[in-house]
Length: 143
Image 1 (cartoon, rainbow, N blue to C red):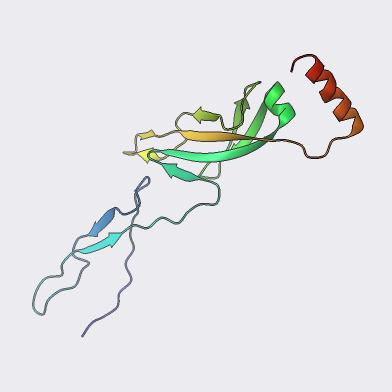
Image 2: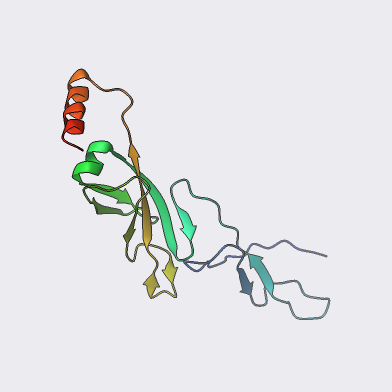
């Protein structure tokens, strides 16, 4: 007669998709025998903000054109939900990736990968007359 049993599994930080966790003695036993091991294969649900790339975590952030030209400090959330401040350098390009050391996937409980932040510059679609005039002046200056 088969029975159903609930088990608690400790999933180590930084585990990869497809890895197996072995629970010694938690498997099925043959009549009169000892229980075998239970193997659980890990499936990781996609996150709406973060992607895993090896030991690094990748994310995107949108900034305004003026912030790309002048630089800016922005607040980002980490995978754990903490907030960190990163400096967007002036003159950053759309698609450029900024590396924040030690904010990625835990490795061996001692080190961490990096957080890779891809910059997306949002170009305005509607401009006031004043903004349009100022941009034309910048163009004349060679910007």
